[in-house]
Length: 298
Ligand SMILES: Nc1ncnc2c1ncn2[C@@H]1O[C@H](COP(=O)(O)OP(=O)(O)O)[C@@H](O)[C@H]1O
Ligand SMILES: [Mg+2]
Image (cartoon, rainbow, N blue to C red; front, top):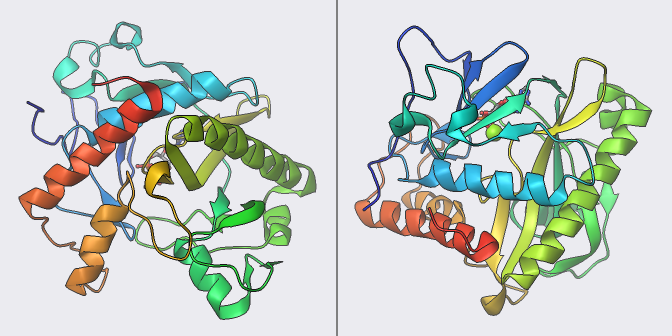
């Protein structure tokens, strides 16, 4: 039986340096301990109910990809093994084991590097309105969920808590980080997506789109940070039921988003409570994603 959802972590005398929507982050000097809780955020609002084991799935999936795609770019992951964590974290496996990553601390760049291989979600909405995504004009007549002629880099701002990320053009990325770094971000994001998606397809999962984050370390080296091709940062679709022209079932929080849309909630906090069957089904979808992709179970 899975444990109840873990919504927050705290240990005596060590408050998190930062709480993101999903992760609690502890500052260890030149390193961070990033703890994926079971919180679920949808439409940028953290819901009152967590999804049991979700944080463990996210951490295991991220570790899998950092190891598999580490030849493309330097990444931040140092270890997910509890033995590598300092005290007081090592002594609390109930809170930290299996869901925490010891990482290099960087200065995050203020761009979310979205890559889309298929047209869906906000990209589909933008395309229907103006035939383009992030200023990139696309061929006419694309269908919902169709594979794009090639993966697109469709960056967004990295908004503060409570504010929605907004899509920006490549020229705006150049303004934010400079032309050299902007091109590096685009090329690396597309390469990480392409290699990741090709592998996932051999495991029966289509990665429709995803979001990467990068940071700069002390000597200015670009580092791939945050999470890696997880069901929170990506849309995972089952390959065997894929067809274009309709929206797809998924192995990720799209299932919860669809439920929330059916409630006509105004997408402002506080979010609604989730029925037990939605929690259970979502938890199973996350575990299925891990098992399918990596062959691992929790
Ligand atoms: N190696 C790193 N160095 C510095 N910051 C990082 C690193 N990896 C991830 N982060 C930051 O930690 C946070 C992760 O927590 P998360 O719950 O995903 O936050 P958010 O609500 O901003 O998405 C993000 O703000 C991310 O930019
Ligand atoms: Mg995040």
